[in-house]
Image (cartoon, rainbow over the protein chains, first blue to last red):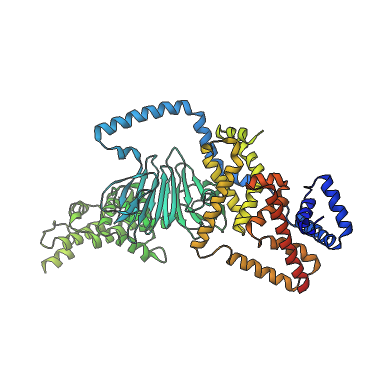
Length: 413
Length: 181
């Protein structure tokens, strides 16, 4: 037997790949050749080390993990299959409707939209999935967003997005997201607040280039919950429950209950850090510039405003609350006046007075009609502050006789 | 049940069938990823391969070719992984291997006979990827030469040759270790 070919034969023998005849030939050769016998002994020793060291990896944990990652997709696929008949009918009806809309309004883009930018406090940017360039949006321009549209805010702008399933997403400054579809949002950078619609869940996921990383960092916010999410390095996400009730948050790898005000950091789809607590109203106060763009009597805005007014003069850093309201500028006056005029505020005279003091500093000529009405308020402090403000805004105006004497004197001089 | 039948059941909505497919092919795909990626990321990448495989399963034309089709996905994902590493200036085969080699060199200093096994296993990560893959397939899956040849798309003799080369390399490194101690 040729010793040069023996390494191949020895390896085949080691792996049980030789025929009985070949194996007998090898055994015979090994009896005669010392060099080959040494080689064979070395190979057997190496084989034992490798067999003992390279143990087959456990498959089941990996199967479980992948199946958990796939579970939402699997459920969706199952639902799709079961409801195929009825969905075909729905699709047919929807197609007819969309065709009609398209013919009537010549606006096929509307049909593809999964959301729209409803409010902005300054210039923001968006782009479609395949687009290279960002498109700037300013003012009250309402923009429809297709699936996988990307939206980002700048250093001094905020933005609100409403999806077609009635989920609301607000972006803090310097935040970027991808709107996968009406019920799924990918947070790329920054911070967002979201409210899931009343009838379905909203998915929030961390930005990741790899499908598994993205899949395990996907969280299902239950219907009607309000959460605030912050993107952290290494695909980590921090989440705070900013509503008044606990939230059961589901991800492929963990289920987690978050109490109101509690904040939890997730890495690899699992909670990793100790929970911290904070006031939901304080945590979401960055949204105030957006909220003041809505009705002055908006309940959400009122909630924030009364919280801030209650803290002024009470909290150690109450000046921060004052300055937050002042930073709203003239836009903040209307909700303050609405609060002072509301029936609820009459049971909280101190807060009314604080609101009125801020109004007297911030009011512009557009508030004169409201200030006139406040001249007839039952509370003399409110009347005096309204008169002072009017005095500032309309120096030449003659105020009614019942305006406090010091003011009349001041004006007379 | 054949792979084709399992694939058809998955596409029809049988969720458990995909788990069965994964049990069949997981170690082979892991061996491939470990041979290309050479780091702790291999296991994560293997799971990613199955996640992507699931997403694209309806596009699989021949359901009986699930294994080779998944191998194609895995190879592409390994290439993407390496490209990402290059983009992040962590070039595969330099940093990782150097770190592993340095670690191995550190082991050599104080190595005892009992540590030889750990050393040999550690050295598997440093041999060329085509040799590494056959070694991993042989010891993870205990595949025959014919099975490996079919999986890798090479001749049976090539499998024999690669295994012989891989073991020869490992023997040389082990001999060097012994002479250094």
